[in-house]
Image 1: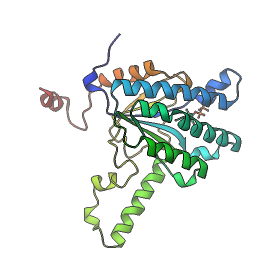
Image 2: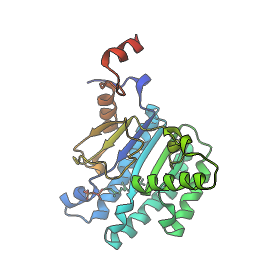
Image 3: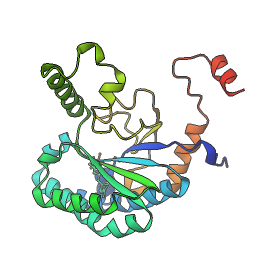
Image 4: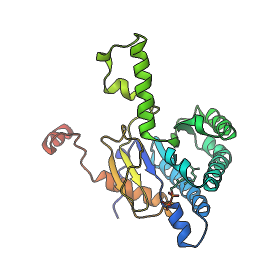
Amino acid sequence: MATINKQRVPKHIAIIMDGNGRWAKKQSKLRIFGHHGGVKAVRDTVEGAAELGVKYLTLYAFSTENWNRPQKEVNALMELLVNTIVKETETLEKNKIRLQVIGNLNSLPKNCLDKLQLSINTTKDNHQMTLVLALSYSAKWEIIEATKKIAKEVRDNNLSIEEIDEHLFSSSLSTHNIPDPELLIRSSGEYRISNFLLWQIAYSELYFTDVLWPDFRKENLKLAIIDYQKRERRFGKTSEQIESEHA
Ligand code: FPP
């Protein structure tokens, strides 16, 4: 079996964790059972990513659209997310993992936000890896927020229209301190981006697996990285140009 080239591990991996509900249904269980299974997959994947030297791992934990799910599932999912974060903060500390959150945090219940904030503060000086949770997140929301921020700067004469470029736009997003992901993984055999990091994945490699999220383990992460390492990233250039750059 192919092995991972440790020198070429992506610095940032983003994951759309999908398939919890189907995994539960296959076992005639309630959907929340699938989300509990998803937590085990999160633990193993975070551990695997840190062991491999990934510097940023972004997990799509709750989208803006997920608020439209039945209230009972939303409440259970929120409770699970917060309890997991609280319970795992010590492990994050031990492994020198920093927690960061992106998304429309104003829409989260206050006690949820308070607990998250506590964990973010506790882990803020850790440098082994940054775990970014996308919570109440949607890329279109994020892009609109960045646009509003820039528009206000122009209105207040702090910025000219000519100064608006790719760099300025990137630095106005909630991911301003995070490099763009080299690799985006989606589980459960769905081939969609679902409003996730639309700006940041412009040149990411996409990897889709049929594995349902609760079955995803560090071995599956390794397979995704091995697949990524076989690809040639050209960024619009030709193969010949890339080869001569690496010669
Ligand atoms: C998608 O599966 C998954 C979610 C909407 C929630 C993801 C949450 C977790 C894995 C739990 C905890 C996470 C952290 C970071 C502590 P789905 O419900 O859409 O599955 P389906 O497509 O099969 O219905």
